[in-house]
Every structure is written in C-alpha cells, then in structure tokens.
Image 1 (spheres, rainbow, N blue to C red):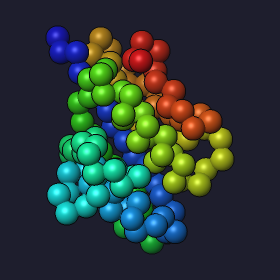
Image 2: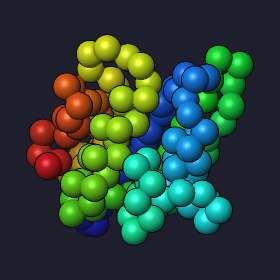
Image 3: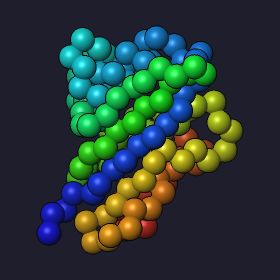
Length: 124
C-alpha cells in the first residue's frame, strides 16, 4: 500500500480572474512558461504538476487537476488551495474537489472554510 493520497480538483473561476493569476495556475500545472505560484514567488514548485488543465469557458475558467499527493505536501498545497478558493468569489465554504486516503476506497470532499483548507479526517 502506498502512502499517497489521490487528489482531484475541479474549480470554476470567474472571467474577471486576473491574467497573472491564470499564468500562475498554469505554472502549477507544469507549464514552464508560466509563473510558479499565485503570489509570483518563483522558488515554489509546481504543486499541481499532474494531469490537469485550465480551460476557458464562456463565463470564466475551469481548473481541473488529478494527482497523487503525500502528507508532507499538505502545507504548501493547502496555501495554494486557499488562494485558489479566494479567486472563486464564493462567500463561505468552497468545495475544491476531493481527496482519497490510501486506506480508503471512498474520496471525501476537500474544501476551504474562512481561508483555510479543511483536510478530511485523518489526512492532515
């Protein structure tokens, strides 16, 4: 059994999302021509470097991503996900996707509340 969690994200962003934020998200998806983080700090890794994409839709953008993540990545990944939730413009809790632990066959919702990621029980 592996100790990696399965992370699946699906987040809608408004059409008003600034281009520098979109470029940063592309960087996290592994696009070497983009900024690496939402705050433009170039030393951070591409935290969503995985199977994923940022797609333009008529009313904004959709970010999808799927990857394996280890518990030691939860800190920096949580910061990114909290920033991502802030970009949605949604007041209150924001469901970003789901996280499945290595010990479970069922994924649990992954959300932010008051600017902090609420990791499923046993994940953080």
